[in-house]
Length: 88
Image 1 (spheres, helix red, strand yellow):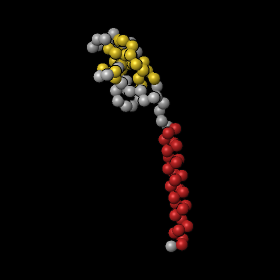
Image 2 (cartoon, one colour):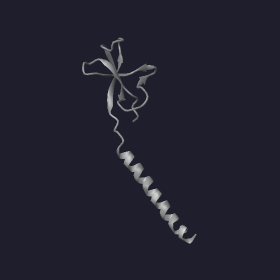
Image 3 (tube, rainbow, N blue to C red):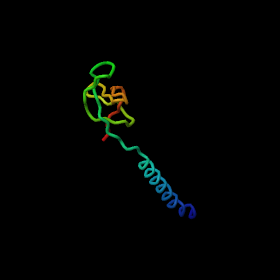
Image 4 (tube, rainbow, N blue to C red):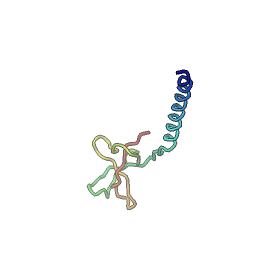
């Protein structure tokens, strides 16, 4: 029993260090959120767009204004890119 009581504090310390290290590395690997200008479609095809709020390309719920979805522009300038809610 005496031997076991010497190793318990070391085991607790080792588990604490491993937990701290794993949370530190996961926070450093987190993706930075990018602000993207969002637009509201003025027609169903997304060829006419009205400037709206800033959104994100991060994983999360859809970017909306009320119940209306906000879109990002593609390379052709059409509002067809799905954006996510900005978490900042």
